[in-house]
Each structure stands twice: as structure tokens, then as C-alpha cells.
Amino acid sequence: MDLLSALSLGELALSFSRVPLFPVFDLSYFIVSILYLKYEPGAVELSRRHPVASWLCAMLHCFGSYILADLLLGEPLIDYFSNNSSVLLASAIWYLIFFCPLDLFYKCVCFLPVKLIFVAMKEVVRVRKIAVGIHHAHHHYHHGWFVMIATGWVKGSGVTLMSNVEQLLRGVWKPETNEILHMSFPTKASLYGAVLFTLQQTRWLPISKASLIFIFTMFMVSCKVFLTATHSHGSPFDVLEGYMCPMLFGEGCGDDHHDNHGSQGTSHGDSQGALHSPLPSKSKEELSEGSRKKKSKKVD
Amino acid sequence: MESPWDELTLAFSRTSMFPFFDIAHYLVSLMAMKRQPGAVTVAWKNPFSSWFTAMLHCFGGGILSCILLAEPPVRFLANNTNILLASSIWYIIFFCPCDLVCQAYSFLPVQLLAAGMKEVTRTWKIVGGVTHANSYYKNGWIVMIAIGWARGAGGTIITNFEQLIKGTWKPEADEWLKMSYPSKVTLLGSVMFTFQHTKHLAISKHNLMFFYTVFLVATKITMMLTETSTVSFAPFEDALGRMLFGCHQRFSPRVKKNETKSNGTGSSTSKPTADASDKLKKKHSKKTE
Image (cartoon, each protein chain N blue to C red):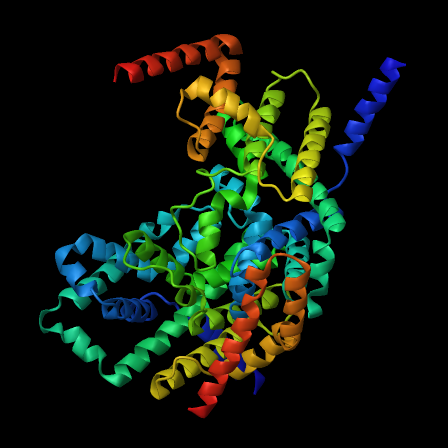
């Protein structure tokens, strides 16, 4: 009985990981991405005055992850634009969201239950993109752990990592705001997901790819739907980070900035730990380093 | 009747750009660069920086298309003769005794000739970009349009970016986003050549090149003679904009009010009404002028 349920679960995961993304899931990905563009201050005004710039922004929001990943792996930046149907679909959605008479489309999409469905479907695409990105990077660099993590991360978090460029396109130039300084939940989650998928790809994680995709998708969907439904900007990682950061990086990282660096460092530490030595010794080392730092601080 | 015409356009489309048209292109680009405030002092103080900017001005479009297609961006340096040509023109323009070249250039017919010849190079660049992109992506007509546009008018993006990094220029919303006349024309040409290439436009390539070049040169010269910077597209664009994006604006005040009631994003949605009324005001003031 137990075996049977496990088998069916595995089959479910396998069939889930083979669902084609193109029309429906991609559609919801585009809708949610362009919706976020419309939420940006000044975006509507921009679309009236400079439709071309607004369209380019929308394309960056939809395909930013591909562009960044292509940039990192030295492939043509414009590669994804050869998928005519995707670009046309995204353009149509951009047009509908910004210029639909009476703003009907926007209102329909913004209706919370509908939006929750789209958000959930977007997370499905995100996880799939991370997996594909890591597979792609693995194809280029068989032992390039960091390459795989970086590619997966970039694929998952998309345009938020190039927000400065995207703002520049909208005529806003604020180099002091940066996604890396204030990582949002999707960015962090993509980073962790990229680490997990990398571990799976290099066979350190004894789990099949399909089930990892399934589990991680469930996690992302539930988190993101919960966050969207409650309109909160926090993240489930806050508790964990609040616990880990003082341990790894000493005290005084209560504020947001340090926190984020902490999370990044942790994940890299994880992967390194798995690469060279079992994890506990690594964290012990870091722990002792932390205590040393504390001591030196006291001496100061 | 048919064959001499075809022969003419065919011969025209086979004209080599190399010595004369390229010289005109470098001349016009570098004179535009010299007109920018501070360019001359930079050239005296830091010649290498000025030279680099000059190269970006001359080869910017090619660099942008190389970046987009993941080719080495410094490929333009491999073309030694063109680099030497552009460098010598840069040297003559900035360091010629008594500013002879500038004085000669300020003579209007010379300017017209150079500008006309520069527009010819634009056609050739667009065609080159479209065919080059087609060799990578057979069906990617969006890519073809983008690369054609980048080759033809992408130089301004590269030079703006260079200025941004130098810190001499901050993106003001309007200056950066407003598409200049050359970039609009290039976009149009790029679309046309792409459709010609994918056989959606039933016209032979050399004919299209000829007509497009004539159109470019004619508009450029009329623009220079009448000293206007935006012509020919304005009414057409207005109509198109009203058709595609404008039907919304009539409804906008009512809609936006509803929206601000229904959800909390009032700050972002209340702007367009102000914007639309601003535009109306502007139009009115223009009319009264």
C-alpha cells in the first residue's frame, strides 16, 4: 500500500514535470510579470508617452531571465526573441494590460482569486526555469558548481536582478537601489532553489529531479500564494535567517542589509561544505571564526 | 523601360561603401561629436579618451549588434583600414590648424552632401544587419528587425551609455526615451527589409534599397534645409497612436476614478489623468501659439 502510494506520487511528479509550459503557464507568467510592471510608479504614464520604451520594459520583465542567463553563458542576448510566438503573446498581453478599453483586462486580472491562480502558475514556470537553467549550465560546465547555481539563480529571479537596467529604460537612474542589497522573497527562494537543484544535478541529493521539481514547486506556490493573499512582503526565511546570521556572521546584523548578505553567504557555504567536507565541521569552523570575531570586537 | 531601370538600381545596390561613403559617415558623426559641449577640451586634455569616444561614435551600431549576437564587441578593431580612416578623420577634425575642416564643413552644400552620403550608409548597414541576423536565426524576424535597427541606429545607445558611465550625462526621462527621427526611420527600414527578406513584401531587394535610400536622403536634406528636427512622421504617428493607444484616453478619467476606488494603488493610477490633461494643455498652448 505504502509502496503503491509512493509509486503513484512518483508518477504524479513525473507527469507534472512533463506538463508543457507554453501556452497556459507562460501566459500567466507574462500576465503577472507585466502586472508588476504596471504597479511600478510612473509606468502607466510612460506607456502613454513612450509606448516603445514601455514595450521594451515589458519584454525585459517577461524575458529578463533568459537575457541574463544568455549574458552569463556568452550566448546571443537576443536569442529568446527568435521565439516569435512567445514574444507576440507577451506583446499582446502588454497591450491588453496597458491599453484595454475601460481597463477591463487589468481589472479582471487584478481580481484576487484570479490573480492568485496566475501567481501560482507563475511559480510553476519559475521552478521549471531554474531546473532548465541548471541543466543547461551543467551541459556547458560539468563541475562548475557556482556556474550552475548562478545560472539557476538568474533564471529564477529574472528581471529583478537587472532592475537597474530596467529602471534606466524607464528613465529612472538609481544606482543606490539594488536587488542584491535588498533581496526579496522570490530572489532568495530562487537562490536556495538553485542550490538544491545543483546538488540534485551533481547527485549529492538522493532524489529524482521530477520529485524535487514537484516538492519545490509546491513550496513556492504555497508561499507565494500566501504572501500575495495577505499582501505581505516578508519571507518565510526570516526566522531561519534571524537564527543563522548571528551565528555565522556575528552580532550586529539585525538590519536588512547584513541579513541579506548573510543569506547569500549561507547558501554558498552550504554548497562549499558539500563539496569539500561534511557540513557540520564547516559550520563549526565558521562558528569558531564568529566567536573569534566577537572576541576581537570585545578587545577593540 | 524595365531593364535599364533594373540595371540602375542593381548597380546602385552594388556600390561599395568603402572609401567615400564611409568617409562621409565618419565626418558627419565626428562633427556631431565635436558640437557637444566639452568635446574639444577633452580632445586637448586627454586625446586617447576622445579617440575612444570617436570610435564609439563611428562604430557604435556594429558594437551593439555584436553585443546582442554574442560576438566579440571589439571586432570593429579588426578592420584596420576603416579604423585608420576614422582615426585620421578624427585627427583632422580636432587638431587641424586653423580649424580648416570645420570651416569648410560649415559651408551648407558640403554639409548636405555629407549628410546625404551618410544616409546611404545607413541603408547598407540595415541590410547587412538583417542578412547577418538571418544567418543565425532563419525564422526569427523579431531578431532580424532588432539587429537591423541596432546596426543602423544603435550608435546613439552606445554613446549615451558611454556618457552615462563617464558621468557627464544623467538620464532625464524624456531625452533618453524619445526616439529620435533617425531611429524611427531606421526602425521602419529595418521592418521593411526584414519583410522583404522573408518574402512577405513582393519587391526585389535592390529596388527596395534604392527607394528607401532616396526616401532617407530626401527627408534628411529637406529637414536640413528647413531646419526642422521632426517632420514627415508626425501626422502619421499621431493617427496611429490615437488608433492604438489613444482610444483609451477618452475614457481615462472615469476609469481611473473607479480604479482608485476599487483598489489601493491610487498613487500610480491617478497619474495618467494628470498626464493626459497635461498633454491636452500642451496641445492647446501649441495651438494658441
